[in-house]
Image (cartoon, rainbow, N blue to C red; front, top):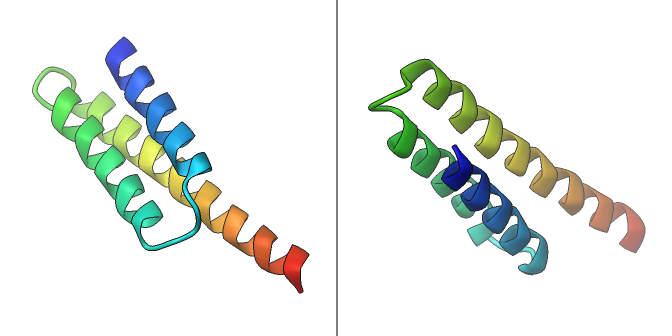
Length: 74
């Protein structure tokens, strides 16, 4: 579980530092898929929960930051 946390923290740091673009949603999807692939063999329910949680929260943060940028520019 500690490795999942480090991947989640590192991916979110990368998402925060990257400029807006098409790779942010792709990175959120890759994060969810990586967590799912890593946890699925031993913990299937935990894998589904954490993959949706990590990918979904990151995706919501990307959407919120894009809307905030639009609002502050205009």
